[in-house]
Image (cartoon, rainbow, N blue to C red; front, side):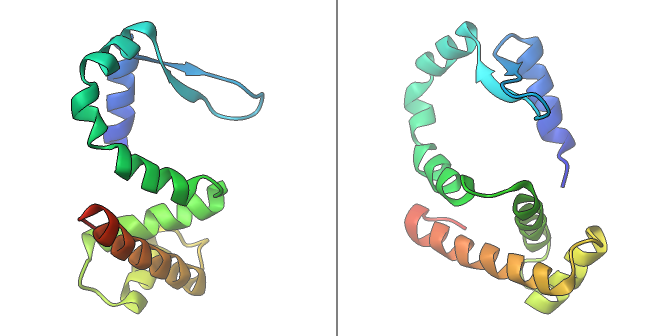
Length: 129
């Protein structure tokens, strides 16, 4: 699902000259890169930021080979699961399908199972889920 909060945060960081958008390939969306000022902020806060590295690595490993269709299914599955953590896979699949009708129930169930498994892995590896 689209995140207005993330969009607002990125816009604020861009207007504060912390990050910039780069367009490396024609026909694709922007990449986000730190500006010099953003790099300085990173350096000053590196000790605090370092605690997030295992989580970032976990997510990067998980999503690095994913295409946009897979990312959409899994992101929506995570969203539905976060909002309905105690609901069965079948019920969550119906909710996912109602949000994204082009994702059929079987694909929704598959995405939810992936999310459930990754949440278990995250809990074991990182201490949360």
